[in-house]
Length: 272
Image 1 (cartoon, rainbow, N blue to C red):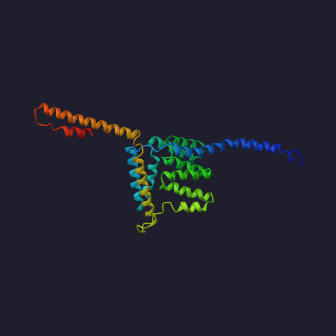
Image 2 (tube, one colour):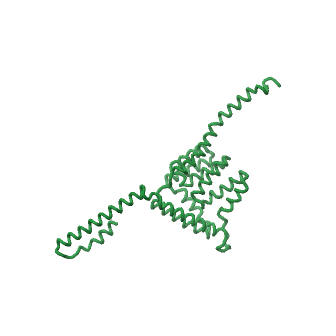
């Protein structure tokens, strides 16, 4: 062998390889850690209690989904609804992450998306969906697929994630997976089709899933924070109603059977 190229030595090459491995190792560890994080977050952060505003958003989402039988006009509004699910401040941060992705500031975008996921959990699906898109753009396909699956557990009707996971499976040469998920995508609108077409069936299934999710969400927190507050309020209200009745009876007796105060029902209604 030539000088400096002793195959038994290989010190220069090995040193270079070792240096490269050291440079790459932290990145692999970060990826592994973050992949585990999504499972931990999904299991450890429960869905938030359903507020009145959140209920209105979900009902609006169901209404928009129902209009997809006739047109695609609601698609953009659904995207806007998904982005703003946690309010304007969170939506601004999510859009900032998307802007960073568009200029290939991937590390900064990823950090921002993870911060949103850690704060809100996976039950706000859109940051997870954008992170899945980012991983696909970086060629980190296994991670992208796992994130798409998380989105679709939260929103089985998320047509963006459904399209995305087909792209990921195709890139992974997973023909079976690509075919399976392609069958679940939102079919294109074909106006001349009858009510039995694939799109109407897809929307019917989406509406059933969304209504089921709303029913589950309405039960979150019962017997805990919100449930406890509601129970305490009802108990307090019942006591006040009882006191009002007792006071009215006392007044009636003191008036020797005089005319009953007609304001009682009105006051109780106002209290409720």
